[in-house]
View 1 (cartoon, rainbow, N blue to C red):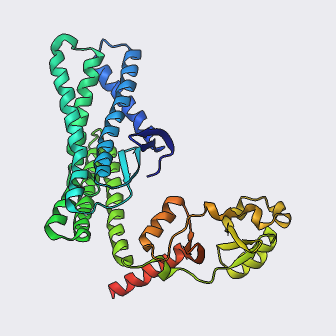
View 2: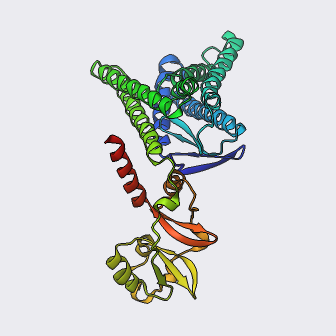
View 3: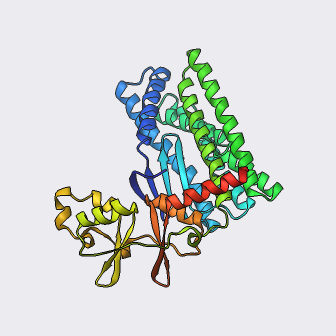
Length: 373
């Protein structure tokens, strides 16, 4: 879940929003306006819209507090946090490493729902303190809605289906009981898939009985089903590639093209004839960088005959690299995060090979076929 719009940093953690956030933001504002107009009939149209927009913004601050609690607890346990992204169904904290033990997993997972329930409780207490003095005012309307939605958010997230927080709590409990993280993740993911199917069926039922929220419930169920399935496949992937290093799968016949070679000759004599996608570029006898079809596509075709490859290559200083003993899973994650199809394998400041996604997928296919057999 990438952040398309970066908002800044809080406690050193990057915060951003996904484009899908605008969909739910619009829906929340629209339905809040309808609720406020129904409950507070003396409010003007402008007041209802303004209060709805303000309430939606505060709600997303509450979501941010929920995710920030996950991230801060993760960092306190030495787990690096890449970013927090708000999207259509809430938010996600991108934590780069798995929890080292069941206790850490439990603490990181449980703190989010606790934060939401505490926020809801504090807001509800504030409403009680104000009493009837502010009845019917926008302040009370905002506080009541935020108190209710935060408690609902905390309870919903505690449902025992991975990847919800409750599913992660379930995984941590199973992990602690079985001492097997992979088995615990499989069970929690299966719970998540079962819960998602129930959401989808309930949503369809509500939709055909003309109940509001049916389609939304089905959409939430579909999202959970996809996420649970992805997490299940991630466990299978880790199991299949366990123990493999970049040096085991890298290709050692690294093709080299001279820097002055024109892009046209490079395409005709290197790319099309060999079928390879990544080439080293030698500049005055030294490794200058890498060139792939990706760099070629950025250049106008008319300029191919007169442009040397060293002019459009990616300088070696900007190239992401891995060491021969880097776990293949870490290399694959690096490729995914940087949208790469291959990475050079470097040892003692020299390129000793190229690790490509295709090599990893072929190894994965072979290993999974053997496991099935």
